[in-house]
Length: 298
Image 1 (cartoon, helix red, strand yellow):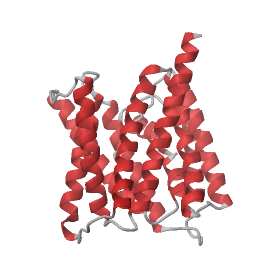
Image 2 (cartoon, rainbow, N blue to C red; image 1 turned 45 degrees about the horizontal axis):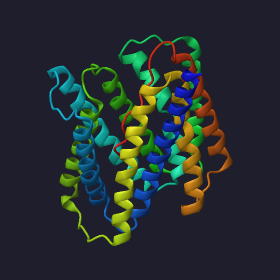
Image 3 (cartoon, rainbow, N blue to C red; image 1 turned 60 degrees about the vertical axis):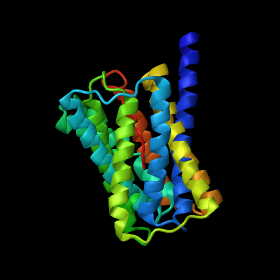
Image 4 (spheres, rainbow, N blue to C red; image 1 turned 90 degrees about the horizontal axis):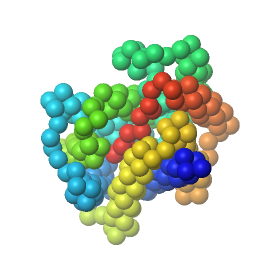
C-alpha cells in the first residue's frame, strides 16, 4: 500500500511538472508579442538562475565540484540545451503550442533510438518497430507537402534532436553530480547565449504584464524541475514516466483557451500515434534503462 501511495504521489508530481513546463511555454508565447526574442530568453534566464541558486543553497548542495569528464558532459548538455531552447522558442512563437507539444512527445522515441545507436544500449525489435511507427506519427503532425506544413515544424524537430543530445549527455553523468548543479549551469549557459545573441536586438522596457509573464514562466520552470526530480526519485520509473504526456493535454487546453488554436484531425491522429508508441517504448524500457527526464530550461 505504501509503494502504491508513493507511486501515486510521484505520478501527481510528474503531472504537476509537465503542466508547469507547458504553462511556462504559454507564458513565453504570450510575452513574445511585446518583448524581443532574445531579451525574453535572457530575462527569464536571469530569473530562473536566481531561483536555482536559492534552491541549491536551501538544499545544501551548492557546489561546483565535479570530475573533468562530468564537466565535459555538463557543458555538452548545456550547449544542447541552449540550441534546443532557441529552436523551440522560435517555433513556439510562430506555430500552435499544441502542434509543437505533439512533436516533442517523440522525445522518448528519439532518446531510445539514439541510445541504441551511440551508447550501444540494447533495443529489441519491438521497440524499434514502435519507434518507426512513432516517426510516422511525427510526419503526420508535420504534414510535409500540404497546406498544414510550416517550416517552424522542422525547427520543432530540430529542437527534439537537440534535446535528445542533452538527455544522452545526462545519461552518462555519474551519480555524484548534483541535479541542481546541472540545472544551474544550463540556466546560466542559456542566459549567456541569449545576452550575446541579443546584442543585435533593440531591447525594450517591458510592461508590467510582460514582466509578470516572464516571472511566471521562470517560476513554472522551477516548479517543473523540482517536481520532476522529486517524482523520479520518489516513485517507480516505469509507473511515473508515462505521466509526462500530461503536457500534450495541457497544451491543447491552453492553445484553445488563450490562443484560439486547435490542431486538425491529421495532427491529432499523429499525436495519438506518437503518444501510443512512446508509452509502449517506456513500458518496454522500464526493466532495461531508466528514462531520462531532463530540465527544460527553454
